[in-house]
Length: 305
Image (cartoon, rainbow, N blue to C red):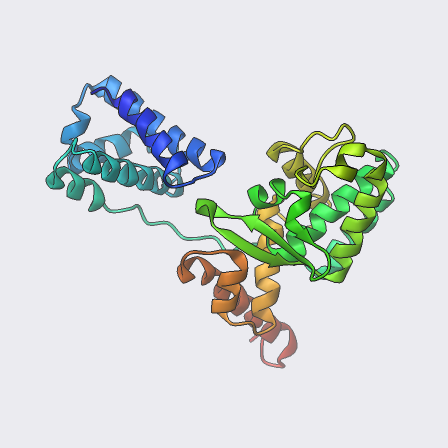
């Protein structure tokens, strides 16, 4: 069976059995496409893959991708070869060769975060932007606030429908990674912002009557794309000095960092972020350590010595 045929079946498996999002499946597909190009160029038998061949594949990409990116591609290969093993296309020897190939080492960067005051400045800038209609102002402010106050992922926010929101207890039901449902909370400021946004759009009948509609739409009631949402966030975060990361994930990082700086336990933060593993949450302990170190340098009489 050709590699491309197994690739199609694998992507279908991710969608139907694993319940992965379209964006996650696209990431897997990109990784497999790179591997497919390597197979065609070298004419290797992908069903007889071993560590030496993986090393050759790794070296063929070394100049074009970072260690972090190859780690992601390697993870894709491991999942793909587990699928091939399930389909009895390979034996356990080949599977173990793929599973045991070491991931390249790289230092994980500490997430950047922004303060509540900086968010207030962003909201004020949106509110005074003369190029935006009132509807766009209310919508964009709500997007910024939801990311910052709830720690949502981009796809989670994009997929929110009106029926998912419970204003009486300030919660939203979202579908996270692996199609796992979770309940997120939002604060009073975010609640008032969303209500203001929806009140403005009451003149659009679909929003008024159809609770299957998405929360964040344009003036034609068309759902905002990932690009639209990223653009809104990046445009506004770029106004913050000394910030080098401008995407929605920076607001998610900010949500987590403020929680850990306030003494919230990692297990609780893990649940709030929808992490499947505590190791994903532990990166924020590094943020907290760095913050304490800088505070000591500034405040202690011998901190700079």
